[in-house]
Amino acid sequence: MLKLTAKKLTAEGFSPYGDVIDFESAKEIFPMNFGLATRYSDLAEIDISDKGGKPCISLVKSRAIEVPFKAHLMEYHPHGSQIFYPLCQTPFLILVAKPAQTLDESKVELFISNGKQGINFYKNVWHHYLMPLENDSEFLIIDRKASDKNCVQVDLKSEIILSI
Image (cartoon, rainbow, N blue to C red; front, side, top):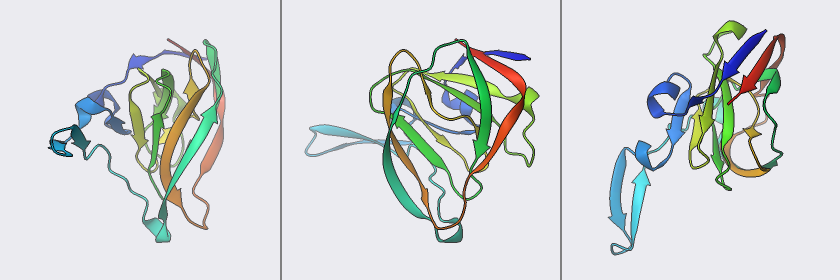
């Protein structure tokens, strides 16, 4: 059994797995609309063009989990990155592992978003499905749409218990 306590989500800590999407992570910041707005730009490396993939923007409603929570599976997407951005400012857990043909369950990491941070999983990064805390939540998703299969999913062999 593996017990994990969530670490604060930071751009540096999450960098092996993808991008953190928040105001602090912007690579470019500039005024727009005659100074009435500020654009925080270049927040994530969207990688979806493999095998003719096209961008797909979706909304999802996800039920809250209770911690401790037992993780049951992990998945990865071989042909494209995936962005999840919370619309309800609800904190959520992020269980990840580095890209590999076979998931090494002993090397998973657990992060917690403050609810104002989204994430972009790089392609081939192992991850768990959405796990909002406290309340059901809604997310904006930007990922790849194509006719081929782009999800590899495995059941966990070990018991992985997540907490905050």
